[in-house]
Image (cartoon, rainbow, N blue to C red; front, side):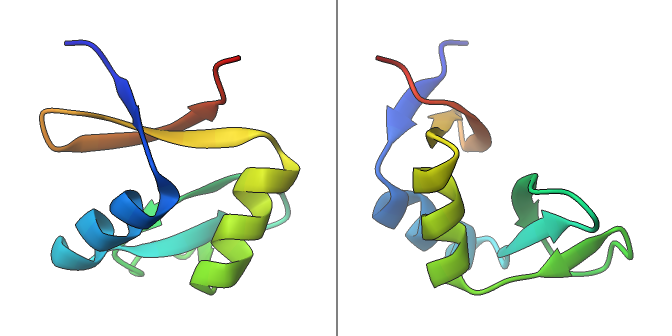
Length: 74
């Protein structure tokens, strides 16, 4: 499967439909989508999620309904 980049807004809409929220790995600047049940993750706002993506030059990629956050392609 090829992972294709999607916009942040599209990723947020897909995440909301799946019941996912943005999360930050405690003690790091790593982010991922979460259902909010993992104690290693703290749920953050969508604005913080957007800011972290921009600051760290990350992008959301998607393939077959699976989303992954990776370094932005040039």
